[in-house]
Image (tube, rainbow, N blue to C red; front, side):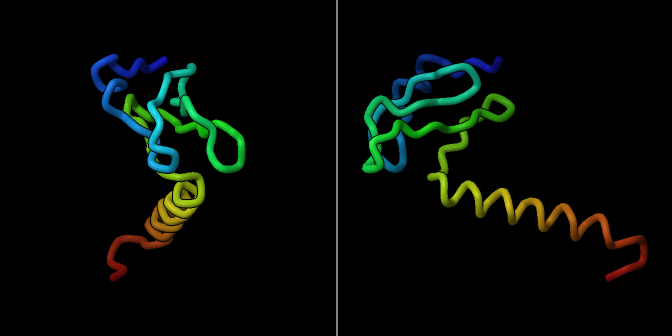
Length: 79
């Protein structure tokens, strides 16, 4: 499990609530609930916290998937 350093955790804040974050396994969790009443969770990939609000994370994942799929269809010599 990637561990986020205490120094980094001390300065990271949730982009939605502005609250500090705590590590819970392979995710960071807000210390304060969002407007929905739930605590927000952020994934840690390769030791890097992905601090995108949930709606932007879905869009970023879709864009990355589209770019990856487009690269597979282009063979050598295709512009």
